[in-house]
Image (cartoon, rainbow, N blue to C red; front, side, top):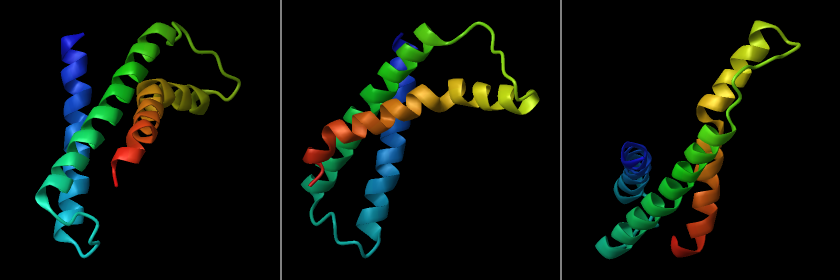
Length: 104
């Protein structure tokens, strides 16, 4: 559980650091001072990280043992890709929505 937590919060931190650094060094003008950038980095790490962690726990609970499709190997590929990244991506998005009011 601890490794899963560290994994998803570090992924969220790296993605949020890329977003913050892009906004600092480009001409967007969205991040005006240091503490605003630090606040955005904190909220972009906390919300999506928690969302990905919850999505991963839901994925471990709901993942099927076998996958049956009518689409052949392409259907199995799509199902495996979804169960590999789908719940975590949905959790990242919901986590981002939950902290969006703090990103201004």
